[in-house]
Length: 346
Image (cartoon, rainbow, N blue to C red; front, side, top):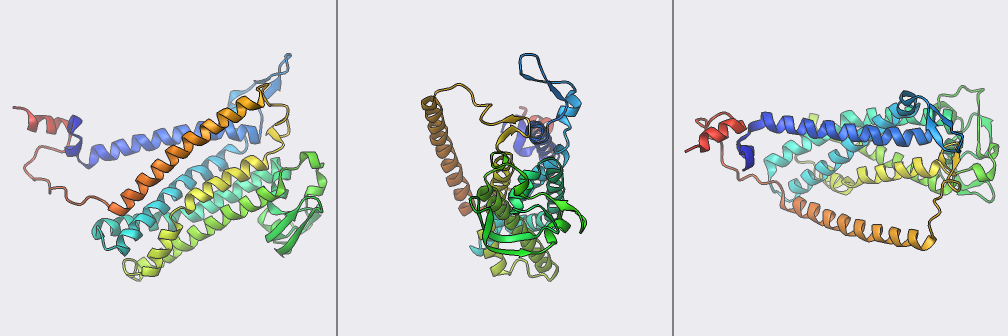
């Protein structure tokens, strides 16, 4: 292969993997920095022509919500990958294919779930605390709080009714919401009644997207603990029910990421830049027909790409890893591109 890649050895493979990871983190940092500034803007002012200009780029980049949201997103990407690897490995074990490779991959995924999921929950909690300080209307909507009061509850389930300003069929734990949000027993936390209707996000979407995200996170935590216990008891490879659960949970990371972004972006409404620029005021003067056409085009293109990618991934999962590569000869040159070139030279 080009540059002797197949004989390059683990060193070069590890280096390449690290470079890809660094590039991904760098890209994620700038994406999250820009989006976090829209959630918690600082370091800017109005220009004379009415545009927003930066006065301090360091304040713009390192805005209050960046650290927790960046950590939360990166860990979410790791866990999403771990869930897919776990599901694929468990599927192979259930089908009795590529047993040695699947055992190794399953242990890597279980280790990632067991160690990273608790850290992810902490990062998510910190992100929520920052949102409570800077975006109280979003927190009130995702928590389902309609009344401003001390000892806010944790609403486990319910059906938000924006017209009646209440939750139907509510199941809640009194006072736990204040504790979760690091508020003392006498501290008053704002409900949606503190904000004008025009300043509230769509409650139903934010309320349920948040619960789906949290539910996926708790499922990952449960599977991580289950897997770690099975591993410790030397039952990981033979735990059929655990393998089936992992196959079912393989898409859970994607679901958590999507619902997390829905919570963040819909919860930011009615603002493009929270508390500063409303979405209605940021709309470009483009005809509705042009917007609909471009949106339809994107839906079709992404639908094709997503479908093709999903089909390809499913075929790879069904095939399993290739395990028929020849065993390296100990007399071969060192596992580097230079070594491969020396070997192939006439």
